[in-house]
Every structure is written in C-alpha cells, then in structure tokens.
Amino acid sequence: MSISTDLLAYYRCANANDEQDTYNATLSGVTITANGKYGDGWLYTGSVNDVATTSNITVNTAASGYSASCWVYNINNGAAGAGNATSFLTDDTGGSQFMPFYLGYGFSGAKKVFAGVGGGAVWQPANLIVGGTQLIIDGSAAPYVNAWTHICITAIGNTVTYYINGVATATAVNAALSNTFNFSRIGNLTSGWSGKHTFGDRMDEIAIWGRVLSASEVTEIYNNEIHTLISGGTVILLPQGTNSQSLFTQGYALQAS
Image 1 (cartoon, rainbow, N blue to C red):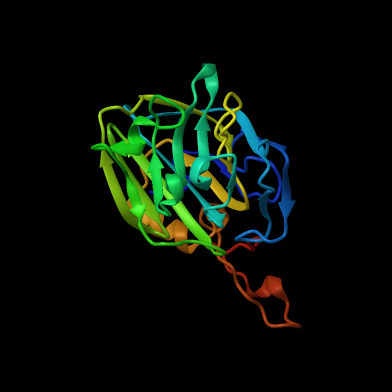
Image 2: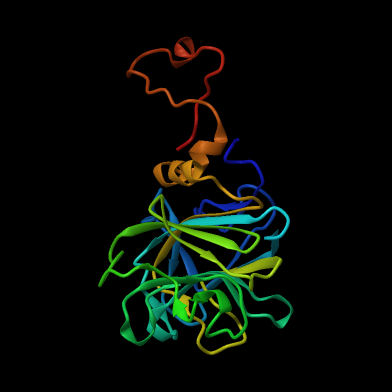
C-alpha cells in the first residue's frame, strides 16, 4: 500500500499549504523557518496565541481509523499549559475541546511524556488517564530536548498506538474514544480555554491519514521525508558536465528535494 493511500492532509511546512488536498492552513503567530527537519518548517514562538488552523479534517475511529504524524523539535517547550504540555492536533469544533493528539511532559514537573486521545474535560482527557494513571510513553528525565523527535499515533475502534522515532512505545485500549474527530488546530489546544498548551518550537512534516498506518509504514516515514515517499520517481545524481537527458531511462524522473 502506498503512503499516499487515504492521506487526507500533508503539510511540508515550507508554506501553509496542504500538499495533498485543499486543507490549507492559516498561520497565526507561526512563521516559516529554514531550520525545519527537512528544509523549512513551522516555528512557534511560545505565545499562547500561536496556532495553525484549518478547515475540518474529519476522521472516524469506528469506521476506518486514522493516523497522524509529525516531527517536533524540543517536545517539552510550550506556553500556558500545566507541565509545558504540547497539543499537536485538536478538535475544537462545535465548542468541543478534545485533544486527539496531546503529547508533552507530565503535570507537576513529572517530566514524563504522555498522550491522550479525545475525552471529556479539556485539562484531563479521558484517554490521558488509563486505569487512573497517565499513559506514560517515556519516563526518561529529560527526553527529546534540543532534538528532532518523530511522533505518530494510530487509532481505530478503542485502540490507540503511539510511536516515537518509528518505534511503537505504548498502546492504550479505552472505550471512551469518540467515533469522529474534526481536526482544526495544530500546535494549540483550544481557543476557548486559557491553558492552551501551545507548542513552543519547530514543527515539520505534518500528515493525517484516514486509515491506520502499519508499523512498517511508520518506520518508513520516520526514515524518509513524506514528500519523497509520495512523489514517485527515483533521484539520480549525475556527474558534472554530462548530458543529463541521455542518462535517463524510462521509469525514472527528476525529483525535487
């Protein structure tokens, strides 16, 4: 199966455009930086109002499931959120304030990476709590500081799997998942709550699928720029001074970086 299969939206972050469909983002307080994971990226200053917004990107956990992935730099940087938590993707439609992808340090300085999917109160999504305990993805004292980290989530039915740097690190089974999410905010929890959990550094390669990625696909995305995986063709490095056209054969195409 191609990585582009059921790819709903893909932000290469060289601008605000959706490279896959028409869910172009509006950047507010977010700027383009040359220091992305792959070329350019989005830079969040840490202001509580920094946000990228889109029209609703609808996914359904009951029907086909969904996957979402991105690269983030300094995963613990954030503003106006308990524990400097970061909200990657948020359903903020119709007054709901769910956190379909909520990743950051634990509360009260616990320094643990946790995640939540959907739920009730904005400050404590039901799926952030599993058996009365935060779903801990990595309990290291200070993981992913001053480094690029790839994060991915897959969800279908009531099962959620979290990947960090291409490796499945935690799975949660919880009956509280909502069937449908409408992603509309990237890097900020909600417009309706003061503790917005805004991201505070760089983000790149943001993608949302209307299906569950396999473990091998997540690893492939971790190892490659999505643009390379979906654009087709094969890159050929040509010696200087040669006639480039004479070196191409059928089935090969020049691919932009």
